[in-house]
Image 1 (cartoon, rainbow, N blue to C red):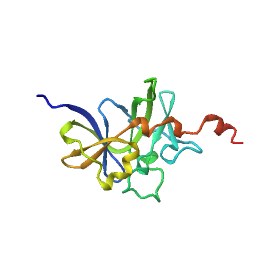
Image 2: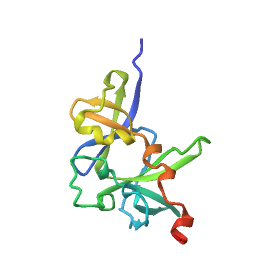
Image 3: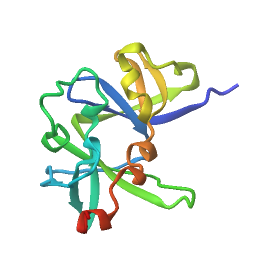
Length: 167
């Protein structure tokens, strides 16, 4: 019987921890970090956007989920060394969504098998709201697999009317 495997991208967070996204979710690693723009009233992990190919993309700050990152130093995503553009299923209509992730170092492509599935360890529990699953990596231990739809959930962003007329 053939083992079920899939490809994933390992991304290094500010603390050096690893998270993963699906092998087909990383569309592009930007050669230069674009200038981020602050979005008022947005949740802390989606408080910035970048312009990519004429589109505004939310820039997810993964440090908010990483228990090992110093909370006194906000804005880690906008100071990331690399920014990757990701694609995901945005909603019930299966319309594609786009977002950006800030990370450190070159993403590493890995193959993951069903046998590597594991529970999130206690030190990675802060990733639970945005992790769809987890796998055991031989070098990095338990690696959360990000649920990009949950991470970029549109319902968490303020409505444009709120930004224009807060009354």
